[in-house]
Length: 530
Image 1 (cartoon, rainbow, N blue to C red):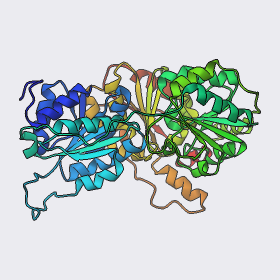
Image 2 (cartoon, one colour):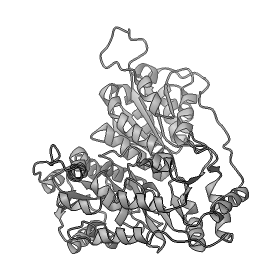
Image 3 (cartoon, one colour):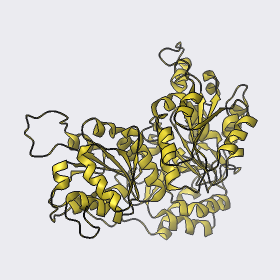
Image 4 (cartoon, one colour):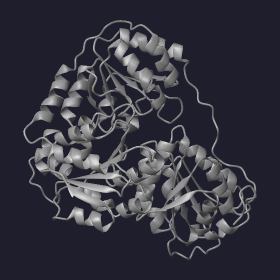
């Protein structure tokens, strides 16, 4: 192994640059092509977390990157390993999470007639990432730096690199990268405040929609501004934790997060939607195409200037600091009491599963991190689990991929070991990633996994019911999730009431092995909150 600071091989250069960028863990399933890279990473203090599947490794890595600020790192072999990275790469790209993926590849010297595991990897990944390149002896250092810059953005997203065993062992040579460094532009905050105030002054019933671009450091200023100006507000799923959802002016969670009709009616009631840090990639329904939206976006990124004259590009943190100290231009109607009443009525409906997030809210400390898969339970958690501003809520939103919740919880726990981490998943998503419980046990990540077991793809089942179709192709056979969890080395229990769930979650928040809590839920009960 080459000593740090005297890197000569491509693998050593790559490891040196990744470590210098703050990468402290890699996740993946290795193959022979990347063994040299793993060896060099280990020598530079970058721990490798062996996962059971490359997709799970990429999901864990992207959550780890989101929490640490340095890009997450996923490593795979060529062929099937690289193919399995496509899901987490697309997820990171659409959710603006910093992720670098490195897969093995065939040596360039192999003849074109050699087709075993030969795939056009760069051509496949390039359309859906910020940056894609092969690591070659000429310019390997510049290529890694380009990938790292591309991953952190703006906008943040995925970078994909390939590395053959021959190139990894070859001597590195200088070369130029291909990712340009640009200085973001934008309006000064004072000028942006004038524009925001003038648009609000002309509105009678505005609605502020908070998106994920708002920096967490600006959450206090954001909440003081909303409170001081008495503005009604909603959030996207990825912005949960930036505002106080228990505030009397909170309207709900947009969109694709349950109560679709109720939340669409809320948007329709507003004569101005102020999208603060709102990114089009967060929106699942196309209401923004016709609603009167004023976008207030961070500089950088391909969509920052979308919306013609209805976009203000500025640094959000200084903008919010100025806004919180400014006087409101007027007072506004609150047109959203109907929405709030409808949300609460749905939660109190007979048989509603809203008791589950309500019990979790009582049991979880404020600094908890909650991850969730995609499905009916995501809608349930988005609308009815209030996320304190010290907490975090992680979900796959842009891609909306099942299989995110459990591996993301592992990545989150390794990134923030001092915080309680709870994954809430359906039994469908658990079937995809439950084997990663063994990973959590092995790497000492004491996460809590709440499995809502309804024996069904309940969201698709509900859609069929709403369209007058009988359930078909959506129901599972019975599986003993407790035994599966115990076989992986985790603790497991059942909970069927609020008191049982609160007690089980409280008992799980320690330093012991991961805990699985199975909560039976009738599939049809979700109809009340969808």
